[in-house]
Amino acid sequence: MSYRPGPQDDWADWDGPTAPIGEPPVTQVQARRRTQPLGYFGAPAPAQTAARSPRPVATAGRPRRRRRQPLAVAALVVALVALVALVIGANRALAFGSAISPQAPLSSQTGFMSGVGRVNVVVLGYGGAGHDGAYLSDSLMVMSLSPSDRATTMISVPRDLWVQVPPNSGQYAKLNTAFADGMANGYDGRPPGQLAGGLEAAAKVSDVTGLNVPYFMTINFQGFRELVDALGGVDIDVPTAFTANYPANDDPQINAGWKVIHFDKGMQHMNGERAIEYARARYVIAPASEGSDFARSARQQLLIRAIASRMRSPSAWPGLSGAMDALQKAIYTNLSLADLAAFTLKLDLNNAAQVGVSTSNVLVNATSGDGQDILLPQNGDWDAIKQYISSRLKQ
Image 1 (cartoon, helix red, strand yellow):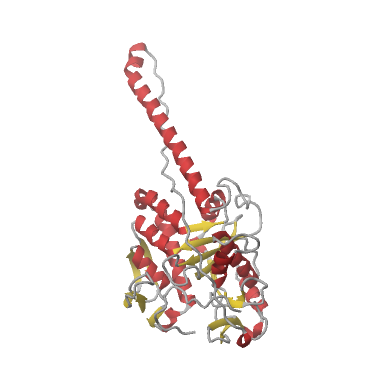
Image 2 (image 1 turned 60 degrees about the horizontal axis):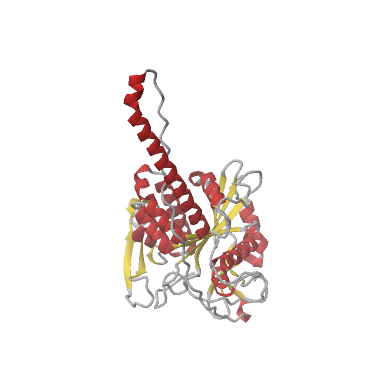
């Protein structure tokens, strides 16, 4: 599949919901467009909490006790302040959890990742308000976790797969339109918005992969840019050097043209803008292999790993308050805050198996009836995709 820069925005081609899996020939399908929904507004981010000071140990003897009395009072004051800070921090954390999810922050839909089986979450990246095709999924990645042993598999699902949108509608479109469709039109009785969009996209990803994917997390890349900056940047080991054309301005109302970006091979420290350029570059000049959706998905996996690694570094901790503000703008999920935290802590990204569904294994390039570049399973066998993924899950 090849792409050429044009006046349209770089983030996602608005092909519009047009045509389900393995149905009438794509050449007979007509495209249709969806109205794009409004943006998402978050709630205040949580403050950092303070630790409780240890209680002073009493000593014998009246004079000695008198000398210690001011210290004891000070310790009680510090403990009281710490307690107040802890309560305020907890309240802010609960507000944060309520802002990023419809679930009660301390509830659990997964039993806090306990028991056997898998927990599958699809991560949907999108450009957000201010971009053409603002809610088309720029990337779709399934994080599959076996909680009992932390076995983790990262599955990149191509956005150009030709599927039914909405599910079972008889109307075909690229997989990346499912989130935008739910955002604009609602899904399964839910009103238009992020919850409907995430659930519709998760349902389509379940259909394609054969996995039970009931959970989703959306990522607004503008928020991720701010997150990286709040953390003081991230370190990414670039495996392949490349050069690409990139929009000179994010705002589609400003015709700023294109700029040329280049990344050398090797470890590089990137600020938010540079990291997003690396993860989302699409119109690659050379080498051609870096211009595919598959290569971009791999780069986005590297960015997510780099952010997770950076957040564990003590040098990044002074910026965590700002990072939480940015994160609140960047993500939305149908997991509770407690479940999301447990899921994140159990993920083993350093040893995760990586699965990419591509034309090198079970897919073929095709063209829709209205001229879109799309992907279909080889020989029309959608079960082959499911079998390929199942055979490569880390147990």
